[in-house]
Amino acid sequence: MRLYILISLLVFFSIGVTSSLAMKVYEQGETRLDAGFWGQAWYQYVQDGRDKDHDGIQEGNIYDSMIRRAYFYVKASLNPWFSFFLHYAGDRIDQDGLHKRPSLGLGANLIIRGAWTTIKLPDDRLKIQIGRMYIPFTRNYGTTSTKTLLTTDLNWSQGGIRGGIFYPSKVGRDDGICLWGNILDKRLQYRLMVAEGIGKEEINPDDNYRYAGRISWAFWEPETSWFNKGTYLGQKSILTVGVGIDMENDLRYAGRKEDYLAWTLDLHLDTRLKKQGAITMEASYVHLENGPNALNYTHLVRGDDADIIGVQAGYLLPQKVLGTRIQPFAHYERIDVSHKDATNIYGIGFNCFIKDQANKLSIDITWLDQENEFFGPRPVQDHLILTLQMAVGF
Image 1: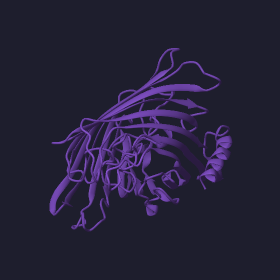
Image 2: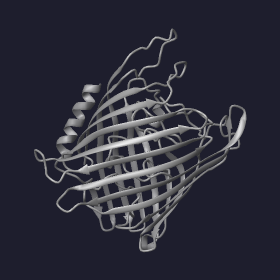
Image 3: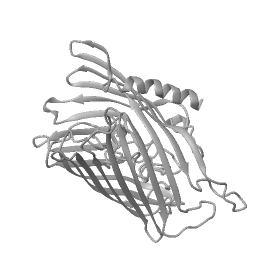
Image 4: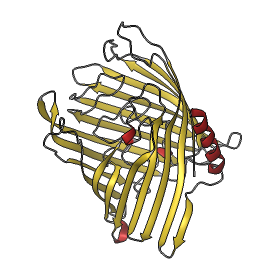
């Protein structure tokens, strides 16, 4: 099965290097339909990645091949003010050691991962978006397309490299309605969402809604679309500051009710250098109260408070190497849990762009460093992780 999927991706790779845009399926007057594919094949080595058995003996390392992402997408516009978007997708297909959730397309199966309709009013000032979509909260997993990440994957605390997602989500998404748009010469983008939130009655007995919002200010070139890019490869000069908030009241934690609240502040810099390539830098801070989820390989469990800092930077080399662009990068994340020990995640790697952000080869070496290791039913220890990635799409 793995071999079949990898061969399929190689076929798509041959298509992807010759076509960087979605294929136009239909167009007549103001009506247009586009479709496309994008995917990532991974090989990953995880040192001491398996939990200890009942006798306390380490079961060993993980050597894993998987389909990290496989996305078929459809974009349709009936007229200038009404459009539709759909992702038929799956994540972490055949990942070793993953608790699979086929109903969400996690670990097995392809499902409708995201789908929404958008009603757009004139001048891009207001859009009404209804469906399952990214939660407008953080930049890393709230506005950035995973096709265009600077690093090989998302931050550890937001769905990255065998990590988790600290906020409520359906694999980073939620069902609801979002009002968003661009004002003040399109320099200010706002997003306000009311969503279903946690649907489990034992956790959300009052069936409370979840509220999320984000605003960002562009000092240089504006970012006006729903999906931003994690790196622009020198194509734009971006300096954007964003703030976001996410909340859901009266969640149940081990018999007590508490309000979940998180807020974030982030900055993204992307700029060309005269005949010297381009740099990308991003920094973020998240404050978390009564977190609803545990994070793998860290001290964070349900109900904890935490502060999370993330920094990443990359440099696009000015000259091509064997016909490709090379971009070394580094990343750091600190997950500091209140009244517990912190986890530091360090990583370095590089991207080799075959065509654009969606068609590349990547290598990442990540070191997970615990301030204090412990072993038990949920062991928390140091790990070295090596990831090789091939991303292809059109």
